[in-house]
Length: 212
View 1: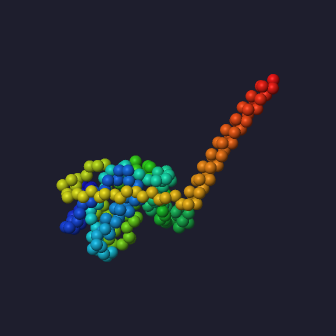
View 2: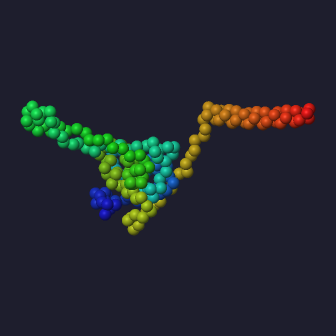
View 3: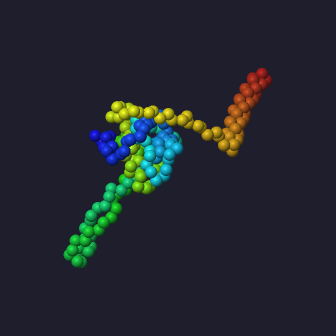
């Protein structure tokens, strides 16, 4: 029921159902492709002030990948809300309860814990933060259906699997490449010096034995 919620408010006529498999995909690259399809930027009829994006069904959200140390270094932060508190100092002087509003405690959770708790929210936040903040944002959010596993209730729909383009690994920059070559040459030189010193020690030991 939660997956089917909000479909009545979407005009499904002429929309395609695109399926994204998040298994083994990098989070940022996947979210950028999803945001492009949700906005309809892959269509020649794209207009910024109209919502012509397709329905996006994301499966295997729990198997999404990240690069670097984002699993432990990336945090999601939020406040618990506003809390009412009695100002005791004014109560002593005025004998009237004074209610003061203030922001609650700051909560945080790293990416690893968030994937264990709710992996669908990780992809949803990544996609929503790539969308423009206007009146069409909520409608585009309704077109995004994310599932932790491979099962979803849209099997009877005409699904189209989205083929993710191969990842292009950027070539090493010339400066970094030169530094790597220097480090390799330095390591080889150190190994050669160590072998030469070992050979010299052995030669000296043999000569000393022969002299005796």
